Image 1 (tube, helix red, strand yellow):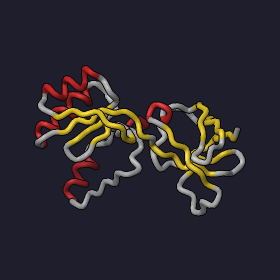
Image 2 (image 1 turned 60 degrees about the horizontal axis):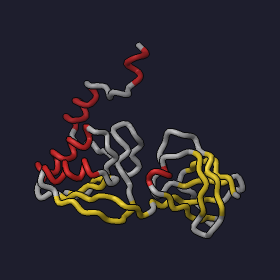
Image 3 (image 1 turned 45 degrees about the horizontal axis):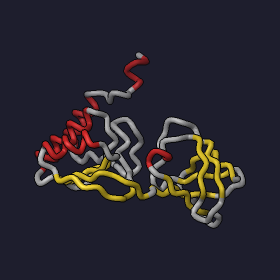
Image 4 (image 1 turned 90 degrees about the vertical axis):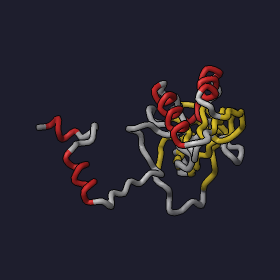
Length: 173
């Protein structure tokens, strides 16, 4: 068994690479046994507390690299007809701290009959499907694919007047 112990940035050279396909629940764990795309037995021994994302890279003790793939799994998909309907259901599901993958007027979550009924109550079309599940990281998680650009100088001034909730400089004064 190959032991994986490190997360790494996207390596420049990927000559000795393989994949590791994991469902969402497995990507949340720091310790688990898995099999690579090439059939190699793996043991993950990673720091806990950070969910692996599709596209992340892991380095084994022997130097081999493994790219994380989000495995297809059973999910519920709910689609909305209009933006207000979509915003409302996102608000209500967010209040329940449910992991959500959000698309263009659709969202995915792990199957739950109560949440599915809530979506129907708000007029969404609810279906079951098998697809990779890549939920949002949350307000304070890492956002690899999100880049916030503040082109408006006025917006930048407003933002600088109000420190971010995790701005620790305010606590050091």
